[in-house]
Image (cartoon, rainbow, N blue to C red; front, top):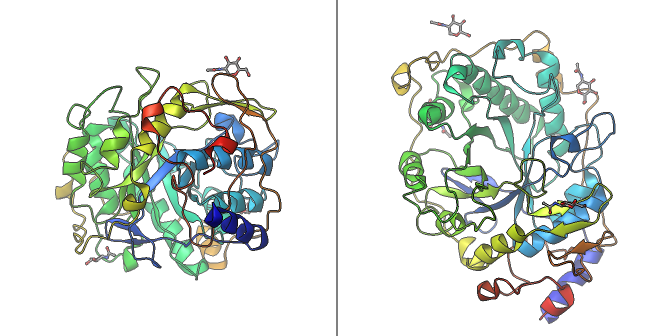
Length: 451
Ligand SMILES: *[C@@H]1O[C@H](CO)[C@@H](O)[C@H](O)[C@H]1NC(C)=O
Ligand SMILES: *[C@@H]1O[C@H](CO)[C@@H](O)[C@H](O)[C@H]1NC(C)=O
Ligand SMILES: *[C@@H]1O[C@H](CO)[C@@H](O)[C@H](O)[C@H]1NC(C)=O
Ligand SMILES: *[C@@H]1O[C@H](CO)[C@@H](O)[C@H](O)[C@H]1NC(C)=O
């Protein structure tokens, strides 16, 4: 109790900050502690893809009241990272980034969006690679590079979504990775923010994709086009499955020698429903933690596709769904402290050299000559985006959640607020003692939860 109040007092007066993380071989590491960082992540897109609306000047990190509500709830779960898919670089994200920072959560950010002209397309990919598209991706980098809790950028999401899209897409995704890393190298002097691809789990083409994006290319200065990480959206663990039955064992086998961190950028199959999230034990346990740097649950808010754990209304009030409690019960079985104190692996496999021999699937691009920059892009990379969006942490004076949030049974959660952490502190289930046995009984009333 004493320590907690001390932390609260500290948080109220200073802008505490998360330690920016780095990539070292297969791991994300905290350079200050030297420990590995395991992602306990949540896909975060309130409002679905419509939550990003250029006309309404709105994206998932633009409304501080919404962010406060969600950071407080995610803090209860023990989440330490959010993934955000659709950002408008020209909006102000300072308050939301500061709230998630104070709540001990890093941000995995897609530089693309579902809007036309704001992502590479699977079909006729070569028509979607042009200067103003790249400019947008660089603008997202500018907008988020100065937040210490920016963990990584995704250069693409599921652009390869079936076998037919493998003829030309790989070289374009690798080119965008190159361009982003080139931009970061020139314009983000204070740290190398990692960049990588988020793949669909299309097993037929997964290993070729992985090899294509993480091999080292001859003549590629600083390995600019090589992904700094490889992420996978996987839904093969459904219901009461197992490490073997879900074929997660095959993933561990296939990624064992990865030269870069590998993690789930989405997981959480929703059939059968409600979900029981037993994969959590496997992902963060001995089955997988050596090879996987954790994962991101899909997803926070309930949308038309039925993956949510929180049912929110457009106006702000929200209700927890039963999956919220199930997920929390699984997280509660983990020893978060131990999980975040793992030492980085002593040796790391070298990347393999890019070569057509790596490609096994007929029709998958085996040409590693990457597309040259589209006209006009070189100037932008050289001079920087203009005008440059800029972000910075700001002080937050009130951590209380303004909206009413209810338990699944309708009772209102009292005194919901973000508990700002001290400098360098990452969120985990430190405030809430594990209670896996109270499955049906657990309710969140922050007054009674306090020790
Ligand atoms: C580049 O991005 C900035 C920031 O979003 C924007 O203001 C500018 O108009 C863009 N320039 C081009 C050439 O697309
Ligand atoms: C960069 O590529 C070279 C081979 O061209 C390789 O030896 C080196 O390990 C790579 N560096 C990283 C950080 O992967
Ligand atoms: C979510 O809340 C709305 C009311 O705001 C309700 O109509 C809907 O049935 C709820 N959905 C779920 C899945 O609970
Ligand atoms: C490989 O790709 C590059 C760039 O797209 C292209 O110029 C070249 O002709 C391709 N080579 C082959 C053998 O297809």
